[in-house]
Amino acid sequence: MSRGVTDRLYIKEEPMAELNKDDFMEDAKGRLVPKSMVDEIDQERDSLVRELFTAAETLQKNMKEFKVRSMGDVSAFIDLSAEKYGVHLGGNKGNVSLISYDGTKKIQVAISEHISFDERLKAAKALIDECLTDWTEEGRDEIKVIVMDAFQVDKEGRLNVRQIIGLRRYEIDDEKWLRAMEAIGDSIQVVGSKSYIRFYERKFPEDKWRQVSMDLAAL
Image (cartoon, rainbow, N blue to C red; front, side, top):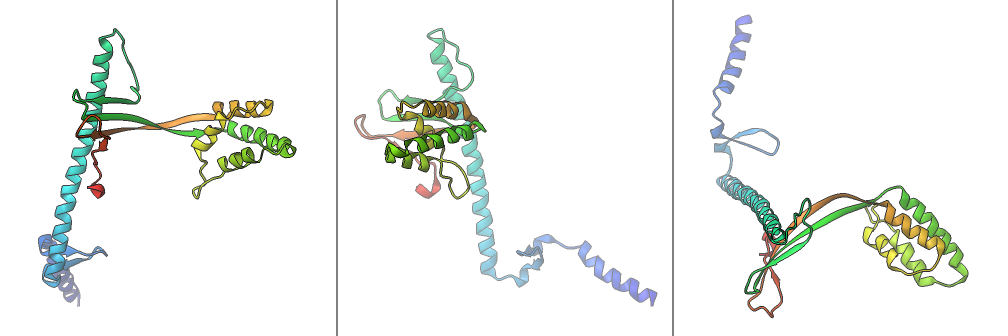
């Protein structure tokens, strides 16, 4: 009895130890399936997907390296240009455009800041609500609609930063409104930034710029 159990365990374990994974393909459930049981078209599809995916990963890596190098080169050129005027620029260089001598090629570097608001925005909203109450009899209906829209949230519960900041453009001579606009300004917090580099070209200097797309879907 004992010998039979030992034999069965041996027979079960030995083939697993000698598995050549090149003879198998792993399916979506993590099971190893002998290639002899996988249709030829399925094997060819798998091979094509893996080959193109590897090429895509290589392309993505090259694009990342190109972006880093390009941003570095532009930054170095800005410093070189500033040095000619005895100026040293440190930190973020901001937005800049470099145009070729013949006016047909342009490189644009942009810094996009991610803005949020701290708790002082609630104070601003409370002051604005008081303004709306005070204005009920004055009939400033358009401003009321603009203000209400500015504080609407999207499906993810996020406020529209641009619309809220845009409220400060309105020249309203109201003490509470001015305090609310000051509170909005004080509540703005830059929580991060992202750098973009874009390439444009045109055939003649008087033509409109056309962006050189780096998006595969747009090619």
